[in-house]
Image 1 (tube, helix red, strand yellow):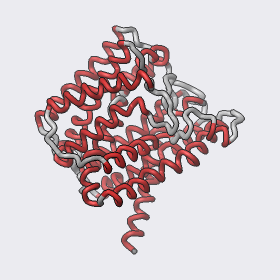
Image 2: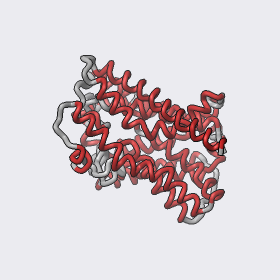
Image 3: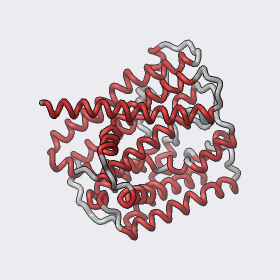
Image 4: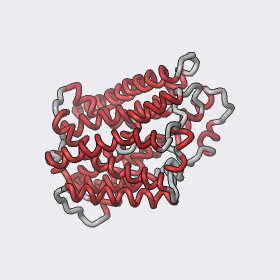
Amino acid sequence: MRLSAVDNLKVVLVAWVICGHALLGYAAIGGWPYDEVNEVTFHPGVETVLAALIGPSGLFFMGTFYFMAGSFTPGSLERKGRQRFVADRLVRLGVPWVVSAVVVWPTFVWIAYRGAGQDVSWWQAFTRRDPLLDSGSLWFVGVLLIFSVALAFAPPVKERAITGRTAFGTTMVVAGTTFLTRLVFPARSGQIGDLHLWWWPQCLGMFLLGAVGGLTLAQRVPDDLYRTSRNVVVATIAVLPVAAALFGVLDLAANAEPFLGGWRWQAAALALVEGVLVVAGSLWLVGLAQRRLTGQGPFTQGLARSAYVAFVVQGPVLLGLATAMRPFDLPAEVKAPVVGAGAIVVSFAIGWVVTSRRGASARSS
């Protein structure tokens, strides 16, 4: 089943992820491999403003992807059966992850390092990076593959209505398990395969919430749940900059460490904020799309078809464009949006071409 609101939201989220990675490549706080070799960074004041305006969305947008994926997984499993479902996921998710981890990602990281004038061999880019088998942005599909296969072998999920009480309970579970997980795996730490284990409570929690809510929630988030989620998100995002200023968190690169994990109130506070934003934010975004992003013509349908491929190819596209922009004597405030906008256009264009050819091939067979 295709839902226009979900398709359109997926396009927006993929574009946001690409733009966010472009910005992180020029940020002092980092979070995207180009920050290891970048030639310029944002002015600290600009980075603080960007963090206040855009940063909170980074705490829950990936969880929304898992929420949407979970919503459609039980139905796909039921239609295809376990064997075909697992085989399909291995091809659709597993193959891109393997190709990225062992070929594409180390190659473009190597290109970025060479562009920065560093004498690094391809083999060094592949074997000496932390974490080993880094797949770039495709860690998402690797983790989704694990969740999907696990769900296929688990007892059948029983769909139930998602109420405000369910959302609150999920928020508390996600927040608590996030804090506990980061006692062992601090935020932004690396594990073999770049599994982002420190983010698993959020990702798995939203995947399961989507699976339990099923297509009913994907088709319509109830009005009261939508309004409550919206109000919670707006209030939380409004409070965050004020709280950061009160606690003196004005330089993210210098002040981030206590929030990443450990027995610290800062780590507990961040885990709680993430739990609140990912549950309320995902419900709000899906509900907003259902109320505002329902139109779909040939162009938007093409974008929706292209979104997954665009997500897959964004990493090499971003690194390639950033490396190409390197010789130009421009500030990060100019380079980052140029790279981001260019990567969105190029990534979706590649997706458009790939999916159009695939569709033409299917029609002619």
